[in-house]
Amino acid sequence: MPEAELILTGRFEWEKIIRRVVFPSNQRSIKLVAMMLASFADSRTGENARPGEARLAAMCQLGQSTVRASLKWLREEGLIYRVSRGSNLGQANLVDVYQLCAPSDWESRFPLLPSHGKDSGGLIVRPRRANPNRVATTTASQ
Image (cartoon, rainbow, N blue to C red):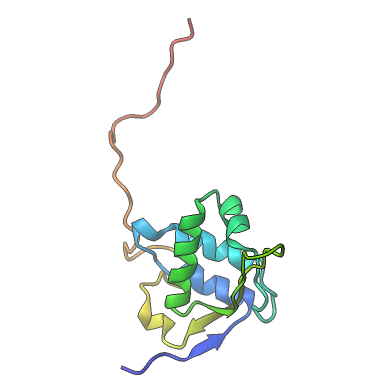
């Protein structure tokens, strides 16, 4: 199977793609990192997204290793392209620069919600509650 061509995309079109992709329950943080990364990109072209891992981690309230793994997954799946690699050597703490993009086969590559965004097909696995009958927790006030 030939490798899919990467299509450069603007921020808002890219966000529509990310909103539709259904991530496995153990990888849902990727969607948060992706959407936060997009907020740093040029809206028309999707270029010049350069928040840095530490800033993304703080903004997403995630660990830096989770953000790093999320960015790696997005790169490997063709949803972002690293234009230039940063460096933490020396006095200038340079960050990676990303371009938002999508593989040409994204609609067949990922499980997707319908374009209206409702999970009518049951694609999103909901976690089971530990006690489904529990309604509220009460506390003693004395």
